[in-house]
Image (tube, rainbow over all chains, first blue to last red; front, side, top):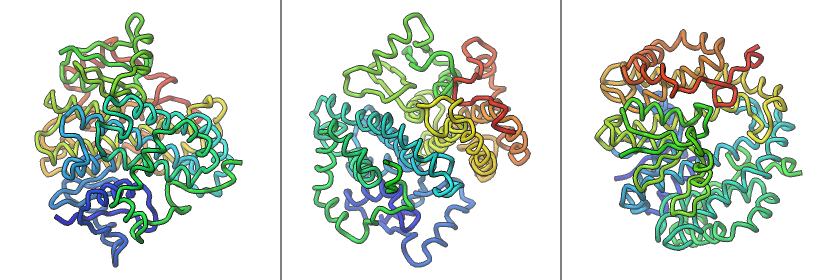
Length: 237
Length: 237
């Protein structure tokens, strides 16, 4: 089956967590909105009158299924491509970790848009700076420290988050590290001193042949100031 | 099996979405943190060195399983208590809707804490007001209008969100309506004019015998200004 991924072209955004899973799985997919007339097609999907309308991208079309919400898509792909545990307990645990990734993504997004996406960054700069200060002091270390602890407490060793092999939350935590390094390099450099296992997980994921090939390809959109992880140096001053 | 729910005592918060499912299911559960030494027990669970440490409450202990993240808990309970569809497509759809509830909950929480939970509301009042203005103008109608559309497009009729019978996202959308009415009564009264199906769903859920009994019981903590849905009249001025 050839999947169709629908996500805003030009940014990694939340779609990137899905792309990383598709790439690691070696799955066949179209990144529809990046192709000709892609945005028109995506807007039609969003406005569709079907039984399961999506609220927002990313959206995955898998045969007759139209699946939205990043963690939901990953749960589906994980089951199909050996990127999730086979047991119910394991599947719940992987999903639980992924939902914590979701929470982190929203909070790091809000470092540049604390007053909402309806206002430009330029119209909420002082607020963004105040938000970022508490994010760097408390939230970033808390979230990434949590994943460090999960690795440390994994009875199967500290190489992966869930059990003894790669699952989809590992790919997402790789992306959190990449994105945080891009967006908040000073704060992240400081935080990483206490995150040896998370950094090692990041490196382990980056070195996987399919991931490495993807990251070096034009399919990997560079980070930029339209996505979730944005580098505004003034936020760290 | 007697479940153990761990959640901050004194507020409905995210725990309430779990409580509503447990109550509708007629499940046997302890609301641990509300009992004697409950907070001590909950803090020990949060600090535990087990294989699946939770990031934050709510947490459900179900036999040997320790499950966190609201939507993850609901997916688990839904499967066990007839509150989720039986098919994979239906389960994905219910989960997708619940994750959209999660997003709404975070955004309405941020109406009073746009600069982060590390600062008091009193220290971010002007920002809260700016955030709330865009929330009422754009986000609340968008989210609740989405659920209206889901009801409208349901091929099995507009009585429930998923298929032809109650599932756990219905209980959560009831709570979104209750909470939004409490927190932002003026904005919500205006929004409801375009939400006849959502309001009817709310009423349908409220009238279910077990839910009605729960809502009238002391187990239902009243809304207050420590929870997610807070009524600060100045935010709507």
